[in-house]
Image (cartoon, rainbow, N blue to C red; front, side):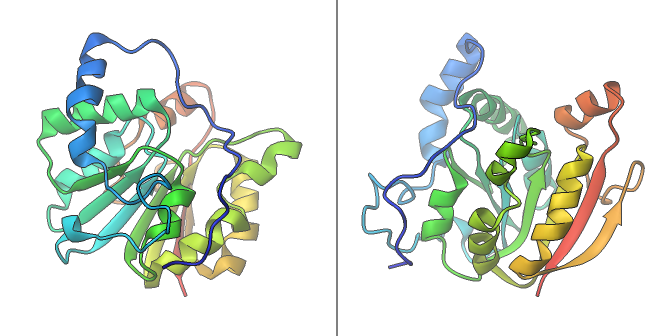
Length: 230
């Protein structure tokens, strides 16, 4: 069994957005269950036993936290067939968008958790992740809400436990204050800053997301931060 977890957690992000299209409802009804990993929720796994990762079949395991519309996640899965990739996202509309992209791309090396990534951290084996992506996370711009950001100890310390030594943690954001907090909070959680880059200096395998394109249209510049698990 993993370390004990709180029976309930406050969750502040959106779960649902605009009305789903008929095709998106079809994706959710027919494609979500086969891709959803069992044993993550407290209903499926009240004892919080360590998750069975048979779907990874011994492959390196990557994670994208909050995959948004799923374009980056599907891109990475298609470009890295020898890797198993997990995606965690509670926003139903984003999940539906991802499922449509998966159906179109035909990728088979993905597993999903349609919920709070903290529940996934409860049951993942320690030292199992070799790469993690955090792309354009919710900025929570008001100062009193900064504690809700992912780059806080509540998220970073469990994440660090699940990453192998030397694993890569990528953060992309268009919010300067998010960069500030990331640089302050991530290293004490067990990471070393490897690279800090700006517009035109993204990772070689980066796929610009719809959130990034919106930021660029609105005059905000992207920041790309790379950390290495110590």
